[in-house]
Amino acid sequence: MEGTSAAPLELGTERIGTLLRRYAVPGIIAQTAASLYNMVDSIYIGHIPDVGSYAISGLAVTFPLMNISIALGTLVGVGAMTLISILLGQKNYEAAGKVLSNTLTLNTIIGIVFTIVALAFLDPILYFFGASEKTLPFARDYMTIIILGNTFSHLMHGFNGIIRCSGHPRTAMGLTLFTVISNAILDPVFIFGLGMGIRGAALATVICQILALIYTLRFLADKRRFLHFGKPVFRLDKPVAKQSLAIGVGPFMMNVAASLVALFVNQQLRKYGGDLAIGAYGIVNRFTMLFIMICFGFNQGLQPIAGYNYGARQYHRVREVFFLTAKWEVLVTTTCFLVAMLIPGAAVRMFTNDPELVALSSRGLRIMNSGFALVGFGMASSNLFQCLGMVKKSIFLSLSRQLLFLLPFIYTLPLWFQETGVWVSFPISDILNIIVSAILIVNLFRKFNRLADGDDSSELGGAV
Image 1: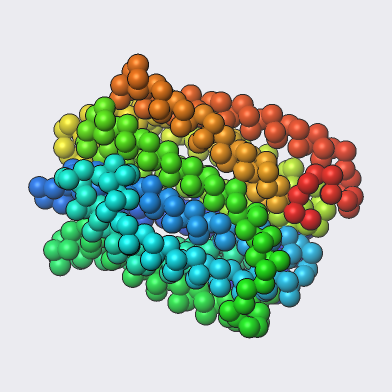
Image 2: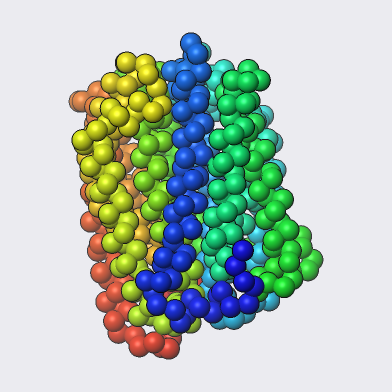
């Protein structure tokens, strides 16, 4: 575990390259592990005897609902991380503790409400998201357990990000690795050993997250640290909640948009390709998510560095960390592009041995990722605006790819190109989003160039 006294201060003084390695590497490991966490579930589920292909299609049907759950968690967690990073840059530790306590209360309330509503209407929701009579039992079995544990999941993931932003990236990484390793151990025990099937995968996930949350709460209750729960712990400060939710609206809407995309994809693939086409999308999505999560790891390194230095009015350091992060993220997404183009079959065989599903997934992987090489730049750009509390730009970038570009293409292109039209929608939207991101970033840094370190940043329209 890292020390308790100097970690936030180094964000304003240490070399940017050193800081990015120090903060991004644990984030990359943690996010890669988190992606493997989901991949392990899919791999085990895809190999359940006799039903694996339909079980993995049932899992794919749950993506929209899981994205809504994630969206509610990010609504609170991302705003809290951004505010805490900026407040630590201002050395306002008391206010940071208030935001932390507020996060506990908000996540608990939202998690409980979501659990009640989702369980009450689970079957109609899953049918709406693309389930059929063959895939509904698998989707229902999995999501019932996941929903029951969603409050613990929101708290665990939200506080993990806050621990990282408060100067303890290795601790955050260690907690994520713990959930991944324990899940990989428990999955085969519950799925095959106890004969629980897809329910076993869900139960293993929830148990691991609860165990990680217990340690997380103890860590954040330690008053020796810069950041710890304020008193009373369960407090709801309306001004803090309003500001936190305002910043979190961008990633919240991005995840809601992702849910809408998954909904439309499932419905269109079921219409033009059937249940196995939905399963193919599930496999392609899981594989591509591995590279996206690596980029998220770089974004996690970017967030505390950019947020702290923006709060400290050291604008040259904000600019430097962005360009270094964007360079590495483009390298990651280019690697995904090359794998998808050159060896798609090898990638999808990790999830299934069904010949028809392998063929559908390989084709989908190649088409879907044909415009993926520069996506890393767009991801870094959207995250920078979020880190600086520039809510409108963050929301616009978050939604442009999903709502302005992708959804219309998913709806219209299959009218002419059938199932292929669904897959082609992704690269077209990626390219358009990269162009928009580049325009906004160029405009931002033109404004940065007019400011000297220490100047008032109000003209930029950020959080402070």
